[in-house]
Amino acid sequence: MKILVTGSSGFIGSALLPFLSSRGHDVRGMVRSSATPGSDDIEWDPIRRSINSKALDGFVAVVHLAGENISGGRWTARRKRRIRESRTIGTRFLVDTLTGLPRPPKVLVCASAIGYYGNRGAKLLREDSPAGHGFLPDVCQAWEAAANAASARGIRVVNLRVGIVLSATGGALAKMLPLFKAGLGGVVGDGGQFWSWIALDDLLMAILHAAEKETLAGPVNAVSPSPVTNRDFTRTLARILSRPAIAGLPAFAARLMMGEMADELLLASARVEPAKLQDSGFKFQFPELEPALRHALAPSNHFRKHE
Image (cartoon, rainbow, N blue to C red; front, top):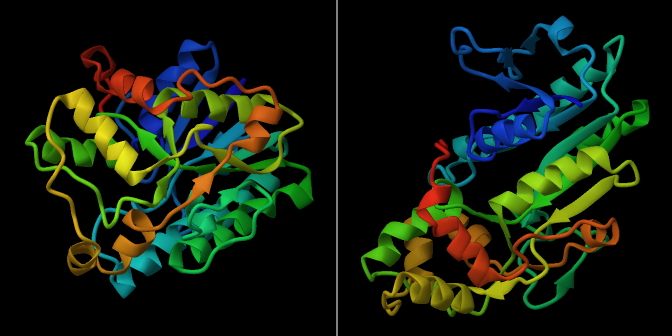
């Protein structure tokens, strides 16, 4: 397929492009910064609604990953506005551009997040579960609504609700590793909150699967079938690294350091099931946590450079 990827210089996008290319697909990235000289990247500015629409004509699939990093800093009013607008305004502009093309794509795979569900304790959550309450659920609902406007104009839309992505070179795990390697890791809060995760390799396969599987549409949970509590995640990571994990981060300290972000990212519990992925025939390479972490931490898998 001829595939366009927004957010192609980010953590997931920078792994997705070589993965798709290795599978024989014709892939191009869209970047907000100036394109690297000699590259095939397409420049765009979603806030200023600037893009060369002619360069987008003829792509069969679009994977939309662009958005402000939600864990890039404390959630001030200004940062929260940037997080929301980077997803809603950018997605609306992309949809308006794609649906106006002479040859629009057949499918739009738009990133979303399991933050859609909010803090739900041990309740098992599937794609038809209602949204939660809070900043992230509100952002995810608006984000998905912006993407779904494309479906009314004949483009199949998949809202990929992504969990915690396991990679030693980007995302949450990469931020945790220095503390755990120093023996300073531990549970967050009481450790009972469920963390729904997915190996980076499985996420890349899930994105391609969503683009290719014509029966998939709407929300799709991109998580492994084996969510674990934060306590179990901590113990497993510490065991693999042969380090103690007794320091811990009390809830009050997390809130003091991170404010609202602590409650919605670290302390929230979301036990999410990939029902639609599994029903569509998707096979996970790493359905269990320990093999997934060992694979992510293997030196041979650290070649990718992520933002």
